[in-house]
Length: 270
Image 1 (tube, helix red, strand yellow):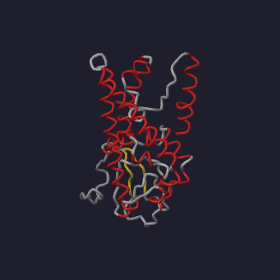
Image 2 (cartoon, rainbow, N blue to C red):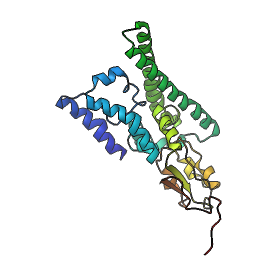
Image 3 (cartoon, helix red, strand yellow):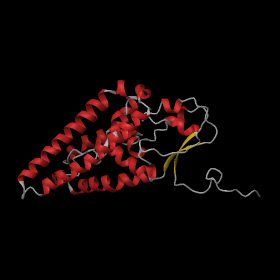
Image 4 (cartoon, rainbow, N blue to C red):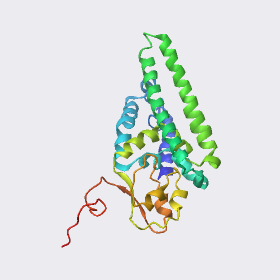
């Protein structure tokens, strides 16, 4: 599905639109991954329908879809970074570190970049809107825009995130630095998506942890019969695919009272 989306939205439409007199536009990207899409100057350069799509897609559609389907709707089904990681980067999937140290770094790094994305947006929006009042602040906001684009989008997403696949695994950028993944991961924790663990079936083979491209120690959850939702999980389904006993299942529904035994409630024996 991801490859099909990239062919349609990441290649065909951006190629066709200039041919019919419209601006080149990548429908598969949203803010904050496409960091400049909510800048006033960017929105002013778009036709009205593209400006509306950009704002509604970034602030309404993306988080709403994460509530319903988890962040996998974007990270595994739509995003070009995910498409590259799951195709070209797949041979290095097992190199992603599942250690506690890597997890701690992930939580600090990715949420720091997310906060930086919000701060940079506020500064640039303020600078562009107040240009007629404060030229100095406008210049400062332009510097923030340039440095954010260079440091986050070029160095971390491009050089580090893609160039180091054979060393750090294919999702190093997605796991540790992508502001879009961070934002959707926060929403995912309150949404419907989870990985369900069938109790007392895990044989501790470790396949799930070995092949998790996000470095989640899935085995530790399976061993303790604990269904879970992790902000980092992109819902690729590989852990369930490689499990020899079918212990894991990806689900999209809010918790209910159907499984009384596992929720510690008494069950009436008729």
